[in-house]
Amino acid sequence: MTTSLRPLGAEMITIPDRDWRQLAACRHADPELFFPVSASGPSLDQITQAKAICAGCPPVRRQCLAFALDTRQDHGMRGGMNEQERGPGHGHHLKAIQAAT
Image (cartoon, rainbow, N blue to C red):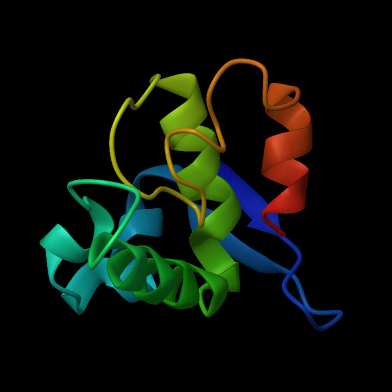
């Protein structure tokens, strides 16, 4: 099974569902960057850096966020959103995925 995504341009990119992680911009980043210990102090720099990496990853950002929402990931930055941004009361599941593109 494959998923077709529309990047910033008009071209379509088809990514096999299980292989989207291989294209992720965060693949070579320090994993701790995506799991800050708080939402204040030095962790704010981590959050900013992690969101910047996610923002530069349009080919898989939507799939990453969808995976986090579908599997109820409770921790870390996923698809450019932290756990509070993708948690209950912060919009509908589909709206969060659409906002990631």
